[in-house]
Length: 212
Ligand code: FDM
Picture 1: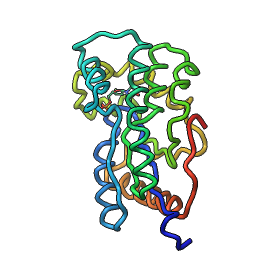
Picture 2: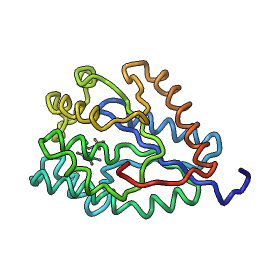
Picture 3: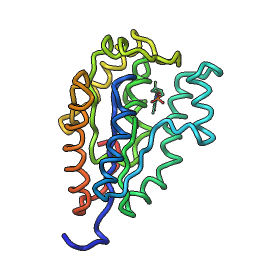
Picture 4: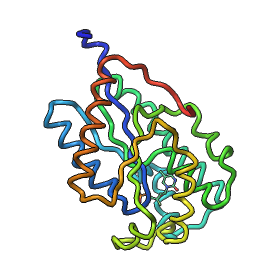
């Protein structure tokens, strides 16, 4: 397909427990794709720079208390406030590497005891990723890496619970990478998977919506 107007960017989501390596890997992916000449940006959720994002940030750092349902809906609203920009970027040919998305939203809130279907509902209609990569690490191993910064969810027992909900959410389309491997090996696998996805989207694969 040589029609340039058909080319769109890919929506690629990295998921995983805290300290699974998502943030370092997304930086590396962006440099890699840029180096190959693909327009790409690194995004993350929560996006703490928006008005809603500031409320989320204050909650995560224990400076404010919110009912579990309320914070769940704020996380979702934080994605909704970026939806139109997201769509515009993809349409203009820019790929997005997104550190956490709706799956974090559902896994973390369900791990607190909220109903999973209730948690999914506000995500319906957001853009569906073209690729979800799960950086798989046992919660104990992630905790050993240190650097839990003292935010609300950075506790081993809770992370174990979150891991179980990620498993429930995952489907055959997810690419699961063993995140206990050396960083360079994870990086190499990720680059291959992500480049394939970017190429297939550039060939005109349509954007779809959650929840699939
Ligand atoms: N988190 C993140 C949620 O609980 N719901 C969400 O929708 C999202 C996107 O927020 F503990 C949690 C996951 C994590 C915390 O994430 C902040 P970062 O990646 O540490 O900024």
